[in-house]
Image (cartoon, rainbow, N blue to C red; front, side):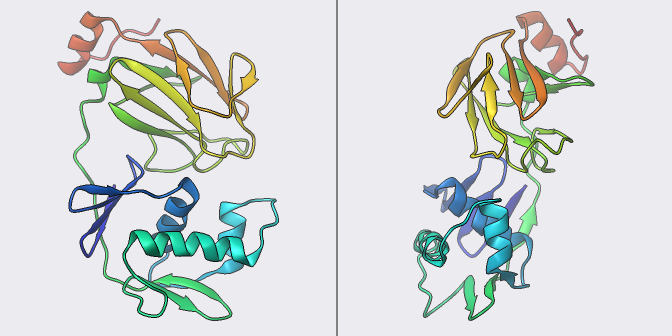
Length: 221
């Protein structure tokens, strides 16, 4: 799902903010703040709700939120005094005030990546690039567990490599029993855990990828 506003595109799948096809860098928290305001447009999102969403069970000062908002505004080339997209509602919070349109992008050929996630009740194909994991509809896999954060982790598939990264989740991401704090490479058969949800990475064989491309699902191991 993408959200287009002005010259900008917020791509939820790749977690990128683009302008004219060029990426505007945003820290994960800044991206999530912009996404939150877009999701609730044109309504005001209270500061308390923003803090609860971005920093659950953690005390942060007002200046921390102000700094994060300044980062988002800088990426959008606007100032608080002359808002185009983000307005401040003094004493309450912030609101997205521009015109925005959501479009669903055509799904990429996921099985071309040659990797799948094996869950307790299903298998999920990974696509090239970033694959979001958590309790969110635009993710590659919805993980229904109270121990899984909304945006818990992402898996990046590039050049035949699979990289797992935790997205500041509350209950952590674990590989081979160890909680990870940096992007971690995965190999075929590796088991990792998001909160209490266990997942295994499966690498497809060339003939399995071909059958999947023809619409025939690969057999489960």
